[in-house]
Amino acid sequence: MPKHYRLPGKKKEGNAAKYMTRSQAVKYLQVSLSVFRQLCIHKGVFPREPKKKVKGNHHTYYHIKDILFLKHEPLLETLREIRVHEKKVKKAESKKNRNLAERLERHKPDYSLDRLVKERYPTFVDALRDLDDCLSMVHLFAALPAVEREHIEVDRIHKCRRLSHEWQAYISRTHKLRKTFISVKGIYYQAEVQGQIVTWLTPHALQQVLPSDVDYKIMLTFLKFYETQLELVNYKLYQSINVKYPPILDPRLEALAADLYGLTRYLDASARASLVESIDVRPSGSDQNEEQQEGTKLEEPELRLAQLQHNLSSSEPGSLMRLVDDVREEDEDDEETKECRNFFKGMKFFLSREVPRESLLFVIPAFGGMISWEGEGAPFPESDSSITHQIVDRPTQKRMFLSREYVQPQWIYDCINFRVILPTDEYLVGRVAPPHLSPFVDNEEEGHVPEYAETIKRLQAAARKEVLPLPGAGEDDLGDPQNLQGIIDRAEEIEAAEKKRKMAILQKQYLDELKMELESCQYHDHSDTSKLKDAEGPDAEDSLPNLKQIAEDAENMSKVLISRKKRKLLEAMEIGKDRKKAHIKLLKERKKKIDEAEKSG
Image (cartoon, rainbow, N blue to C red; front, side, top):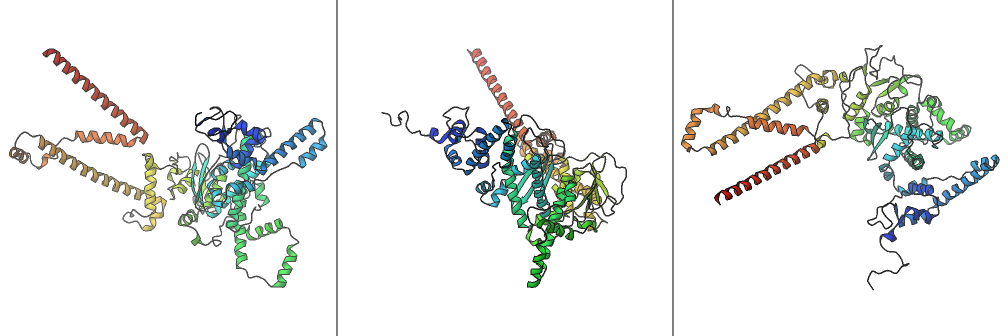
């Protein structure tokens, strides 16, 4: 009998014992396919790819340990109860027993995913590290319309908007935003929270069309888990800055669809209240008892709203968006956070009605700027003389104030990405804006540096005072964007002179090498060569032809301008041509030898 012979019906071994197909798993757990998908999504169980697929390539395989892991999950029993409850409701509706159906709907079993989030992410850093997909999904559903046939409810949309605004309010309040980029898909953001880089995508504020080839049930299952995860993350982040969660919004701002601005007000009020409470001296015992008796008469929401209205005075326009810098000491933040906090410091922006308001309400306060908009609930009106920039996205602007600059929204994002206040000449109303460069792309690694990127590098060098000012200009002129043109021209002259010097060195080196080659190829003796050199004079080196070097420089320049992938393809084509030429030369030599042999024979 062979060593590895196994009788039929015995215990399985190898991949047959380690993996099972999806149909086998559904049959083993005694659930439907939809319940099995929900369970796998919530528990984080994904299909596997075994080395040898026993049942064939057209099956989906799961590890046997994952299925046993699902078998002992308490959520499985809850999902079975929900399935049974749905059958009872359906049966009552078919019998036209509305009272029983309504009573069953009120007592529908539900489940919470807090334990599963804690199980999948044991530490808070793990939850932050896996927050990219969560934020993108929540922001996507926050922009979708409520569709009853796809089971996308209004309450679900409102909850996603609330969670997304809470996250953005924290990032804006703590100045943790680092990069942003506007693309065709939407707006990309990148923030650094507790040492973890978080990147997410927000769709544009346009009318969304739901495609018919998408399974929204699976997306809603993912969304249920992501809502719980983001809610727990927001809770921990708000607790870290001593702000109560969930926040209480101003009903007036909430009715005006200014949720993000209302959350910013709440964060400022809560931070200021915590600062006052830490400074105030604790009252005596009798005063404490009186205050406790009076406090019992007010409910918690009314107390928080009263505190909000007390801390934010409506008489002072700038008080609504003022950030409380005394809450957290500046020594606790890193250098990049301090730079972001003071980037737009002292600037006041006004948004026209055609610009993306929610995005700019999130971005500008994250970098220390004060902002207002056109409409009700704005902190200061358009006629305020202290406004420095007005964001406009229209071909022409009829009424203009001389005390401010009118720029396109791209100016804000470009300034943020490159950490320099760019000149506004290229971003004025009616002009074609320069290319919007992505901060997520490394130009050096790609092998191509755009022309506008070189201009921004010179502006960054000027902002860091790496280029001295022109004669007659002071050091204060370096910080003025309008006076940077002369500095840019001087930087270009210095760069051109450096290139000319390097080309002269390379040309002299080439002439020396050509001279040595000519000397080695001469058939005359050394004395005749020296006489010839003396007769020609010192200007002979300059009169040597330079055509070969010019051709090589042109070829190298053409290779530098193309991308790395195309350059490698070009080199492969050249190698193929050289091999083909060598093969043809070899065939010609062989034919020549054969002809010579035939003639001699």
